Amino acid sequence: MKNFQEINRYPSMYLTALYEPRDNGLCLEISESMTSETVQDVLINDKVISENRLLSVNENGTKFNISFHRYVAYQVFNESFLNFNDWDEYETGEFNTFCIFKKSRYMGFIKNETIADYIFPDELKHYGVYCQNHVVHIISTLEPVIEKISNIPQL
Image (tube, rainbow, N blue to C red):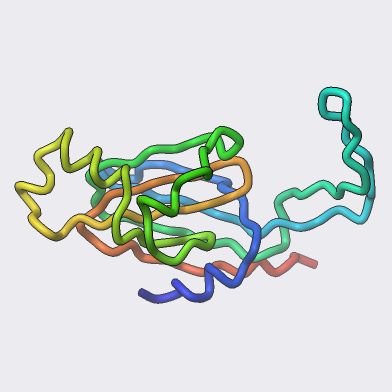
């Protein structure tokens, strides 16, 4: 898959757009993050966490468009509420910004709750996009197209 390795070279990305350009098609835009030079303390309950730097979208950084011509299902999660405690028992694959699962609880759910596996036996794949603040899981029979867009500041 073109740009699969490239997208995973970025340790931190933001989901900046998610839309359906046509029925049952899906596009995600993810953007490179940047770390602030400003150091600040954060108070959580009664504890102070020191020397934090704010992450934000790098408006002049690299972006990727991930396009699925057709999907079976997708789900968007608030990254803050994901349960990472026992995921290794159920899921295997490369876990970076963009990953492909070999086995997952989400795929099991889709196979149990839809007829997609009957229509497309052994063709379903589970893709995951892990960004700051959002995680998107997509089940599709078609490999996505990943397009790299480098932003060059205008003079």
